[in-house]
Image 1 (cartoon, rainbow, N blue to C red):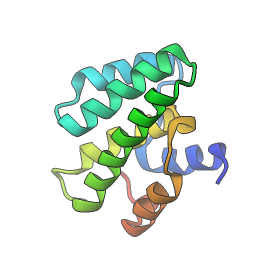
Image 2: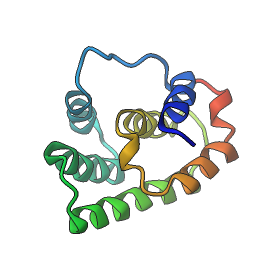
Image 3: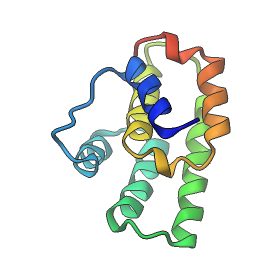
Length: 121
């Protein structure tokens, strides 16, 4: 799936994104507001990587592990009022930084399983 296609599909779920703010500023705000430890760790690792914008194998490995934790968490939870913020914040970050999604196949499988593109969060 092309990045633009994924972003267009995500916008149908997460609603409009403030394009006036740079992605890093939005990520920083999301990171600071996050209470879920798994998401907070993922956002922190992603922020460090996105901030320097230079691939480092160790950091990419750490990012892949953090993303794996998030995706496993999504597999274990259901779409109810309590989990919607988790899905939405993660999907907003996927929209802002699609090039950092390491396991697109697993992400799309989860989204398709929950039929998430037909739901508003």
